[in-house]
Image (cartoon, rainbow, N blue to C red; front, side, top):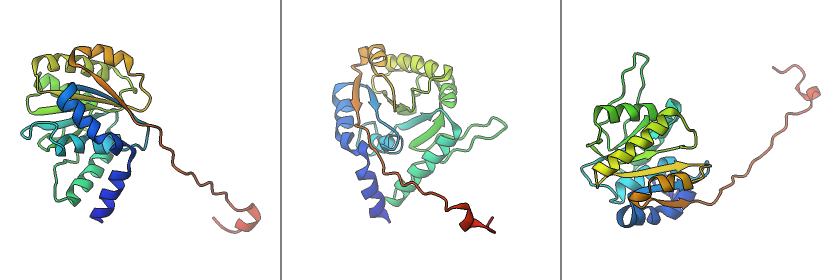
Length: 212
């Protein structure tokens, strides 16, 4: 099963830019924009590359924000499964409770909502425990997303070791490349990836007579 997970992860389109991600964030700039479509593996694999490829200091953690709680939970479950099978278990599966309590962030890779990211910055304005922030699906713009981008720019000015990865399926990156130009922002694109679709038709009504 472990080898199957590895083979699947290495076959995802995002794997083709793994070395580029490391080279850019370690040698060229501290902000990276990645444009990749649905199914490319960007949301599950990039946090693992950041952790396991020596891109951030080993004492630091990673924050990965998503627009929706459902995506936060599903991605955390997937990455936890992949890392656990490789004898690592660096991911918490967050639970957002109705009483407003936030999940703890003591894992190496922490998936959170973008609103929770804003709260984290309010509590610790330089995000001192973290070495990289990933803002995923940034094309789904909200007030929280825009605020976080603005605050991350301030953090990057205050911390020379902080890195920022921004990902999207449909983003026109030029605006953000200009906004983060002082940090040598770079862009990577993953070519579109299409999966085969099988169309299944229901049998004629006459064959289904008496069935519910």
